[in-house]
Image (cartoon, rainbow, N blue to C red; front, side, top):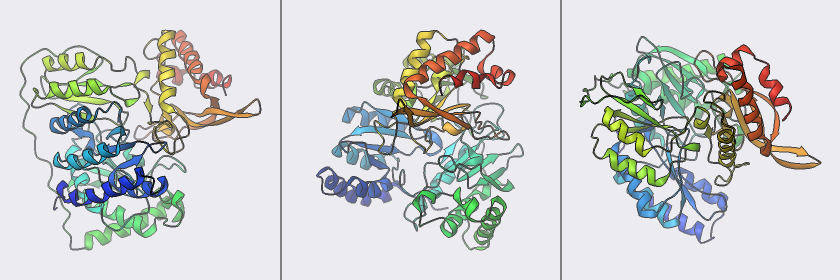
Length: 515
């Protein structure tokens, strides 16, 4: 497979700079600019006075070099707002016209491509964040996720698809990347092959994926990706943008089995073609040297299967790291030649391949990390930034964290919750056991800010379930609801997951007062 040189996108930078200048000069509308800028991984923020930029980090992997580049741009342009996204990218916010153009251009020199980060293009390929590092996984899927990300860059300037295409790889049944209900997902098997799922997705008209193939050798994954692209081009809805996602093809083609037949027909075409899309099976990685230092005992430290190494979890509240902490962390990793960052779909970051001594240093720098399972809750960037956002999901999460801390609830009394500011489900509210989606609620004859409550979602492979919508809860009441819920669970002496299993109707009783 011929690779795509990031520098091949350099000629496109002039067009972006020209159109961005026209937008900030008021010469083109926000809608017109959005239709153009998405290709470049950038959008104007709400109000049209600043821009955001999405840095692709294929498979969520941020090397020391890419980390250093990002930190350098943060310092160069005085950036204060960052976001680790649920698609394992890094978003830079509140950028000026000059800053967004400068960072996008210089990112290519660092091997970071923003092209296709928005709009109707293949998005960042996702991967289990600790793939290859921990016990209990089927096998290391990271090399195949990276190969898929490289291949999909060929489609950035190919014939346009109806809408974005999201591809994910999971290394275990934890299914953190939602591989079984992405547009296209590769779920690892214990035998070293993949099961392949297609035409799934969250948001409006959510659908679990259709298993279109099983026992697929890793060497063949690119054939399945091209077949997905051809299926989407052939049957995707070009007329109705609201239905121009792969999950709508299940119904349009007559159901899951009809969709599977259509996909397999395209797959046969790809295999019968002359293009050789085979890739090499991943080679054994060289061991990382250790220094014999003791691995610290901490809930944030995960022992790797590589002897003497560990990973440190860093979860900034809402996936928004402090810019200074981010830069200090990058500085520290410059002296750790085998360390790197792995971004997770729940807006966490893992610093991996650390010795015990290095882990102590990283933990000290990232002491602002979440203090409990609840504080690792997920939130999209929210309506204060996003043009299409309905509610400020980040503000809600901050209010909830403050209320739970003030109440002194023990760790485990509340689960990780998922908050989306609008129906797009960027916060994956439909697969959390507790999820909230921005909306309105009529109260005293007036529409008031509210969130719809979803319960009972699950992402685990074999137990996938979309949450049930219970009703609207006033935004101001949600912190009190969570405190009441946590107090109820704490009194039971159980952790939240145990409590839900033992008393399946108890959550409804607590929620009833607030809905």
